[in-house]
Length: 184
Image 1 (cartoon, rainbow, N blue to C red):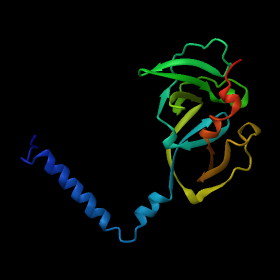
Image 2: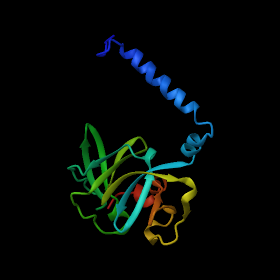
Image 3: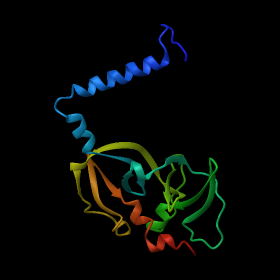
Image 4: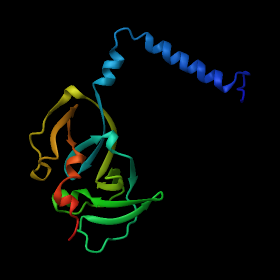
């Protein structure tokens, strides 16, 4: 057990912090903190072409720069290839190319959203990632001006200030028969 500069043990410091956290939460007599947590939807927000989209933070393993990849013979053009990302084999998909039919321009802002499909890593290339946002679940509305390519994948959106963020349903993308059949 180590001691800090005042002679207190590390365990005592953690106990003190835990006690402080417990007492602080007990003073929220209105319960608003819990209601806020229950009413919050956390997402990763990004741009894909002209679309501002979000996916649930629980669907994303990591956000990484575009990795060098090895092409897969006989695969569709939008399946860029396979890459080694920190020892994990990742299938890299050009999401814009798959959805809109045109290659995503690679810039300094291009990123991969790492997710898992059937227990395997998948890297979805997007134009730009803006970070994480907390949305109020009550701020959803039906998607009204979605591109035909996003039909069935984006049915609702959040409004945050003047921006609308379509909720991309990765589970629907990953069960799309065209997506599953990546042969050329």
